[in-house]
Image 1: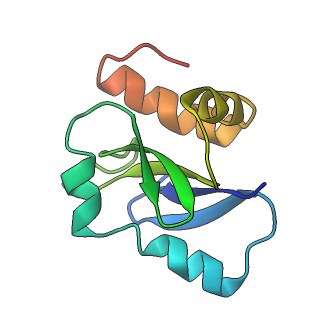
Image 2 (image 1 turned 120 degrees about the vertical axis):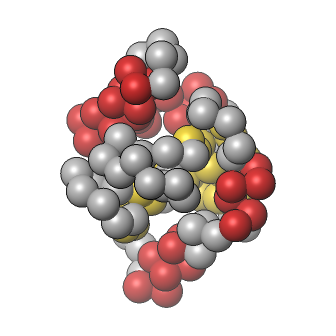
Image 3 (image 1 turned 180 degrees about the horizontal axis):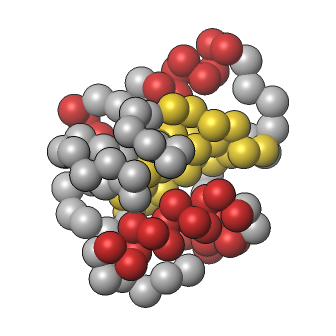
Length: 113
């Protein structure tokens, strides 16, 4: 299973961070393509949502815990099909992901993981 994070990492600016699995440079560049206008059309409310992006299932939030600018996003991608329960399990098993999402959930008054 391949899992990646796309978002901020303590400061402004998005980056891709592999969480599980090995990613080639081509795959990492491909994941960066999620930073597009279509993302904001799908993820248009301040709550987490699941969608499909190419061969990944995406759990995303249209904001960042580290950057208040419009267009920021916090995303976990799982290769293939995944459910909300899969995302919650992966996020809870990784300190960095838990921190990023819980900071957002506090900021937007959503129940923490």
